[in-house]
Length: 174
Image 1 (cartoon, rainbow, N blue to C red):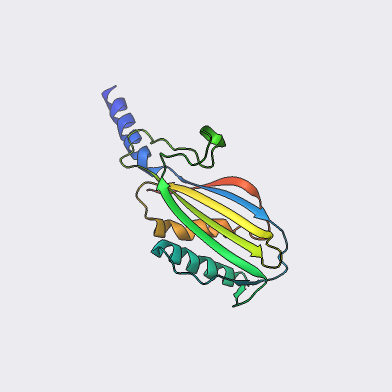
Image 2: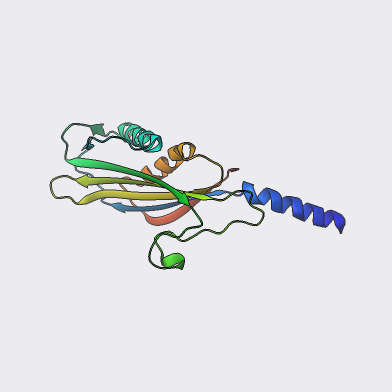
């Protein structure tokens, strides 16, 4: 009995920080983009993480055949944010909120943060959204800069074939 309790205790300790990482994705847009040329508004990056995200998105778009230009039919916007995951975002409680609060796992050693990335391609001529993707993940110890490549790949995975809201789970130790 003592061994069983020890084994259970150890597995709870390990499960608090070794469960999989869930990536939550919301994507919408058209299946065929008329243009593969985009412009970015001149901006001063307020954070190093936003600069990293912008560079990663532009690199991913280039690898998919897109090109940046000073004037183009599409406008690219990238957003990044991080917040304490125990705080809900939105005016309603529970799953109807924009982002519900996350509770700590049993024996979790640190508080989670929620990282969010947004990518939007808008048609300049009329302001219509051609593609929009929002990705979010919870992390306890991983810095935002290290989560960005995975999150941006997930955000652009639906480009040209948006799938709505879904989650993916990957293994990882946080």
